[in-house]
Image (cartoon, rainbow, N blue to C red; front, side, top):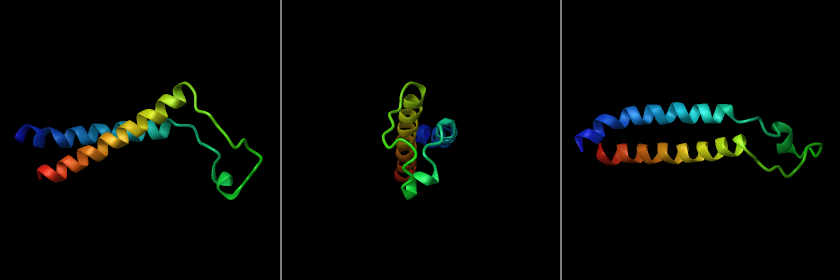
Length: 76
């Protein structure tokens, strides 16, 4: 248990940096205009290739970061 407590802050730092990078590398979507019903852009959009990978990677990294934060609360 002491090993997990000593490694967990480093794991959280690495996960947070990877999560920030994955989010920042994603393309900008419809922007603010899409929130107000701007119909000039296509309504349905399918992610492909690298964009799909970044989307899934950011979701997985967010889940891992949340689980590591919960683990830090439990073992503290």
